[in-house]
Length: 231
Image 1 (spheres, rainbow, N blue to C red):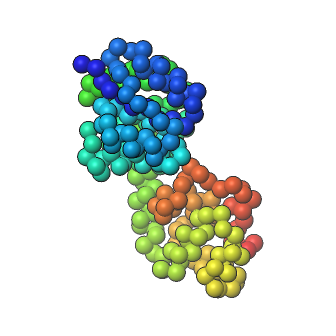
Image 2: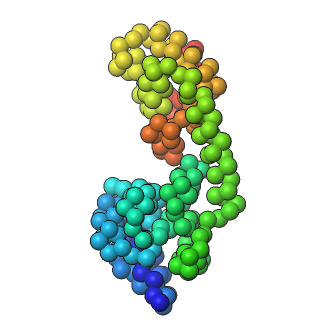
Image 3: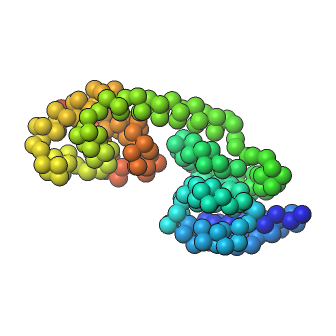
């Protein structure tokens, strides 16, 4: 029985190479491809391939977004995620949404076909030495966030959401109509309650829990390490 495969990656050369690699295996038939997540989701919904090979980061919808949507819609398509270097939060989320395989692009030529055969046979391809660590660390971190964030007032949570972005302190104070001095007091309270000492640590603890990307980080690194006392 031939397994139908859909492939999505926003790098044209890699997409071409992957589709050729898969198509050369007589056990698989490539039924479509896309360079962005929105187009990929539309085609997967229409054709319902047996397996979808998805880049974790694409314009439109990410591979994880697509995997989650496939689950919500109850489609029979199994998902294999391709990544250069997923964060622990992303690996945790991949397992949480039911991804059947995770393949790192540096080993894609050697590992992808083996992964697809394993997944097509009803198995999973989740590197234990990487995924296991991520599951443990992320579960601990998310539990810690849930425990510590419950200490925050509604106002402190509002400020935390703003601080865990690139928004300068002066802009935060202006946006929520408080003085810089009042913001400093709030920040000291937030850091104490969350048991962190810098904006970097706050992001590491809270980002994925409040709708921000851990992997994305900050463009202006100089804005991160400034202690509250320097506001």
